[in-house]
Image (cartoon, rainbow, N blue to C red; front, side, top):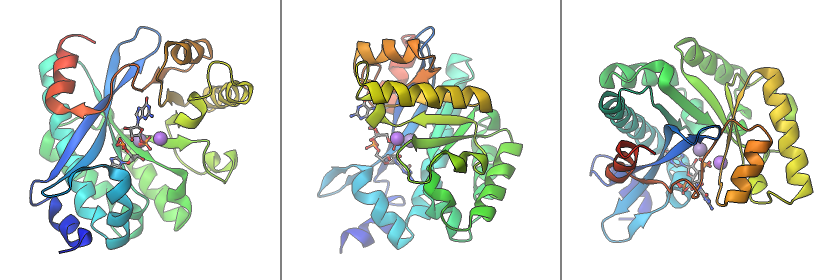
Amino acid sequence: AGLAQDLAAAADAGQLEVHYQPTVRLADGRTTGFEALVRWNHPTRGLIPPVEFIPLAEETGAIAGIGSWVLREALRQGATWTAETGAPLRMAVNLSPRQFHDGSDVTALVVAALAETGFPADQLTLEVTEGVLVEDGDAVVAQLQSLRALGVRIAIDDFGTGFSGLSYLRHLPADIIKIDRSFVMDLPRGRSAVTLITSIVELAHTLGLDIVAEGVETEGQRQALADLDCGSAQGYLFARPEPADRAGAALAAGM
Ligand code: G
Ligand code: G
Ligand code: MN
Ligand code: NA
């Protein structure tokens, strides 16, 4: 069988895994939550990263089943960690544009997953890219608004890499901007990265949005982002995405 057929069966075959990368508040270095990142443990090809199978899953439609499995798994894990730590940990789950575009009801999917796992709606973040608005923009905006009405927060992932400029921020209901790793990489010295991040932070403050900077790998980058008043960050400096047992152990150790 080809990769596409294998992929359609992967969730049911128990071959998908979710890894978890912490989000850290820069003011005090505390972990406030995790981003769920899926991996495919293929029986013969080994661990396949999402960049190699999410696009295929989007083409074939397998993303619906995979997305629903990841959401339920991440919320189940989030509910466990919340119970263990007593802290209102956030869980962020990535959604593909395609999950909004095949007539499926994302809100119903999320409501069912929240009910099934007992994870609180107001601790859930859903990450979308601006590409989600390219097709059926009005219908997608309506879905995002109904999700926010539940208390779910919407994050714009990979912010700054799209082609539509800042104007779409007026149309995309959002709570959080995730500054793309490609800008963070040029800190602390890169003049244009500093200028760009400064304007994104100003814009976010004006619109009442929170900021998460992605891909922080060095202490210099962390310090620059703290100086620029970015609220939170993720990156290898703090932790790589890890299986639930390792991420949970780090959490319990009080990171
Ligand atoms: O760790 P990393 O290789 O996990 O992730 C690469 C890309 O795959 C990122 O753009 C990320 O947003 C995407 N991705 C990871 N997990 C998921 C998922 O569960 N659903 C979707 N749609 N994308 C994901
Ligand atoms: O597109 P999205 O932001 O959802 O994807 C996050 C991707 O970035 C994942 O592939 C994740 O493994 C990767 N990632 C997370 N932190 C770092 C980092 O500090 N450096 C690099 N190079 N990649 C990172
Ligand atoms: Mn993401
Ligand atoms: Na990103």
